[in-house]
Length: 164
Image (cartoon, rainbow, N blue to C red):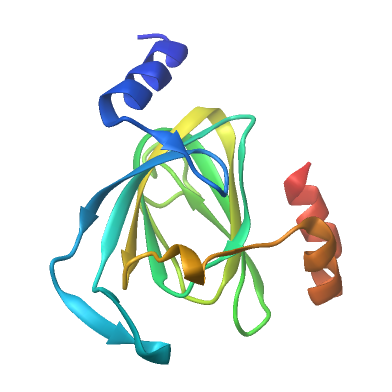
C-alpha cells in the first residue's frame, strides 16, 4: 500500500484530528480512576492517544505535567529533542529498533521536560502516547523559538538545527 494511502487510512480509521502542537491525534483511552495531583487538581490516573506525524510536520516544543510514554506503531523514525528539568538536552529516537539501531519501540519523556518531535526517516510515524496522570490542556504550554532561546541560550544551536 502506498504511503499516502496508509496515512489517509489511518486518519479515517481512527478519526484523527489536528493537535494544537502539530500532527493529528485522537484520545482513545481514559482511566476510570480519579486522582488528585499536585496543586489539588482532580484528574484521571492516565490517558492515551493515537498520534500521527507526517514528514514535513513537527510537534512543537511543549511541556506537560505528566510522564509521557511514546509507543511506536508504524512508519519511519521519529526524533525527540528533550530539555529536561535539570537543564540537559537529550535526543531520543522512536521507531522500529530492528530497522533503526538508534531507535526504541518505547520512549519516555519525564514530566516537566520541554520537548519536540519530527520525522527524520520515512514519510510518517504513527505512534501512541500514554500519560500518567492524564493529559490536561491547562497543564500544556507551547514554546516559540524566541522564548526557548532566552530560557536556554546554551542550547540555541541544537534547537535551531533540530527545527531546520
